[in-house]
Image (cartoon, rainbow, N blue to C red; front, side, top):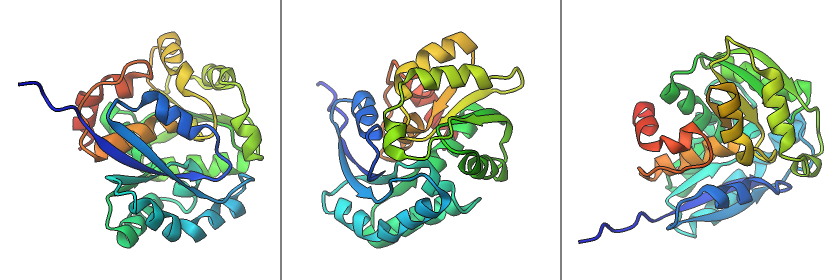
Length: 247
């Protein structure tokens, strides 16, 4: 008797001007798992505009829940780390409270990936301004992982971030690498990254975690997926082993 294929529905809360995260999800999701999206308003990636995204969180989460999704993920990096340690879990709890659905965030998935891969020191690259990059680094360090170096592309307009060539992620990843960094983190789900993860891992000899990649991993883990996804780095390629360590 053949095994029944894995199926599931992922609900994604995406920034309204994000043009990258959905295509990157579609590229990696296994057959049988569908993606359903709602949007939170933002055009400029500044602390003030990031904070205002949460104003419509309840309404958009409830709309996603009507599609009978199995999980809801806030697939946006900055809104889930904005207020420091624990804020990512507060956001997930808020989504679950208003929808009754399991929930997670990009930042939560990133922290779980650190645990699963045994990572305690990272190099951080992003599309962000130095101010937003600093908030991201502070969140990561408050959760027990050292940021040994960081750099960003200093792009504030979110549509412009979505238009950046994927090569910019590869180039910045190589630039920020340090011997003491156990992994490279590429932050911002509107910054194209998935296509260069495998190449960058091979060139640097260490895991590369992009926030779109960890969002996909975190959402699939939440709905019980146990398969393997090739082509997008160690985290997804070694899904069964890695997910078990994050439990």
